[in-house]
Image (tube, rainbow, N blue to C red; front, side, top):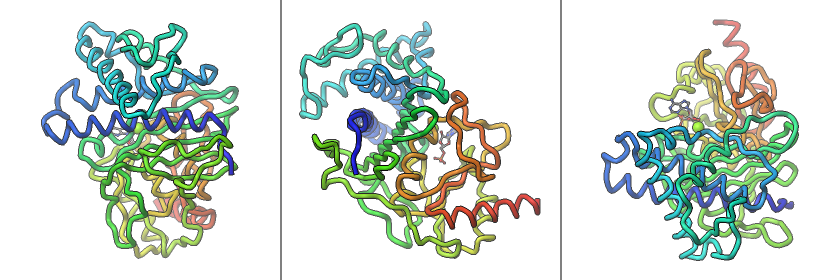
Length: 372
Ligand code: AMP
Ligand code: MG
């Protein structure tokens, strides 16, 4: 198994963003009103996480385009002055803390063409420009990083699961993925668990097509040695190869989610004959949970008017597939990330732990549609 050098950069970028998220979550826990204001710490963290990942990737891979969820319009607007300042402050504070505790080296290396040194505070406009580097639109030719800086805001605010998700697509094929899950327990949850409880320091999932999927503690150095192979701190992830329709475990959202459809998921689970209780998990952390065997099925049935976005799935696709799982739309078509920032699908999105479970889920879904 070997991971190319850009995977180390991607892991470091996701780890920096995860550190920023954890520091913000500590503030939210201390002040439970903080999540509700207009430019709340959550909003600040979302922009700052995107800036940080953008800067870190651009530093060693300026040739790869970034496609990311946020734009800096709100920071550049006249009423965005305070937000802009707080975003830049959070980026600078995260870098300062990372240098101080030795996570990154205060070397002479610089960010971007302007040559700003890593040890120097970055200006607000430099940070806003880094955010806007994510305005790219993916196509079938070239290399694209695809980023959701904080997926699962509800879970983030509530202190449950959330994820920093970074995928790498090369000529239309999602080849790599890194998922930072700062509240994911180190070990697979027990058989009877009904949720994945929060546990620090969390887990990083990293996957590369043909090289597999690994998971390691979120505060560990990227465990890719000079020979570019994951070292012992990383555990190999495999989705449940033996999960059958009757033994499979579903994941579901917490509370209302625009992309979940509890009734349809329940009908499908009845049709497939599973006797297991579903596991509740927020965010794209579901893809990591599927990849290491916490659960076996992740179903998304958004309403017709909703268009899926590429950053909500790119990293997850790489991780699930490298762990032996399968992901398609509800009709069995491969997900197509080459048509811009939206990811059009038919019949929802289905991710399963193994090919035979996936075939059974698609067949049951087709039966339900015929009956409807
Ligand atoms: P959940 O999987 O239940 O944690 O729901 C979060 C997922 O829904 C993420 O993939 C989000 O990107 C997506 N999502 C789409 N629209 C919204 C929205 N308006 N609020 C929260 N999450 C959303
Ligand atoms: Mg999202």
